[in-house]
Amino acid sequence: MTWFEPPAATYRLGDLEINVNPELGLVIDGTPHVIKMYFRGEPLSSKRVSVVLNLLMNGLAESTPGGAFAVLDVRNARIHTFKVPNPRIGLLLRGEAASFATIYTGL
Image: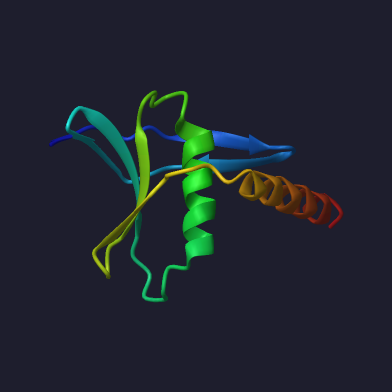
């Protein structure tokens, strides 16, 4: 296992730009793993994991070809990995981004 500087990117969802900045990059068995670390005390829900993994995958797939994406729940010593893309999560994120951008620009 070796460490590498994890990539960071700005992922664009319509008019909204989201900074994607994982904290940890590890090469494990020849595969780069890009990992977002979760430190909060409140439980990490599966919905939140799905959203974060989707943002990591969409924001960093080009800069990490063949890479694996994960969220590490530090307090519970549990790692959640990206397995199969859920197209509904992408639709949800685009809808939420459009809603937020509309509200924000209307203020």
